[in-house]
Image 1 (cartoon, rainbow, N blue to C red):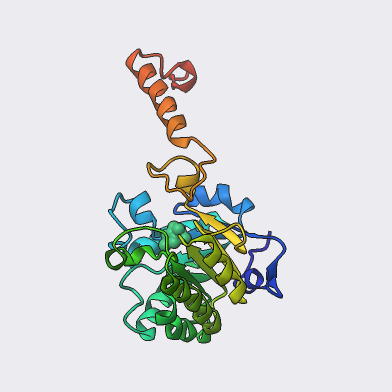
Image 2: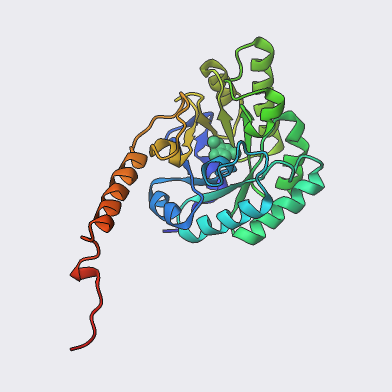
Length: 270
Ligand code: KIV
Ligand code: NA
């Protein structure tokens, strides 16, 4: 199967409508990427790996090295989806030049085709700089977790008129700057719909609206593997329970010496 491209994702939205919504999930490892890949259009190597994989308190401490290591693994494990890699906090905000250096490093190290960065109007110049130099960019507006220290938490955005206006304005600015898709996270539904209608690029919702042009979730959240379940997560699986039960059985069999059995044991040639 030939790998999808950023322009192909962008073209899925025609005349303001997306017939076939874009399916996106996060992936941090090669094996998980392999399992998700046939079912997805895009795999996001999200900086959510900070909490999910590394036990960090937020995405703020995530480094370029972490993103490159996991990004390369996901590219190696996938054949079909567009792999998008989050630019970590501190690697792109200072200037378009800093962003280009970080983004080109990410693409060279991982073989991925695109990066994602957080922020709207303030990042528009940077997005234009990257896209003009051959780097496809996904935008991210609404609740932007890298700004948790400034936002004061992870509450949904767009409840006040000023906030709502800013979110739609941010999406428009990114669209004009040339992003090929926009993640809309943690935004009240009418504003997610307004932003979706206001832009030519497909919008990918997470805690946004079914009217977005696609959806993304953190895979560990939807599998029931990570310990948090924000309102916007539908848990399709109970992986943590499955692992707990499976490991309980293993521990019991080690304890009573019923594992390993003959089938798992080597004997000398007779
Ligand atoms: O890091 C991440 O997983 C993300 C998604 C939640 C959109 O940015
Ligand atoms: Na992210």
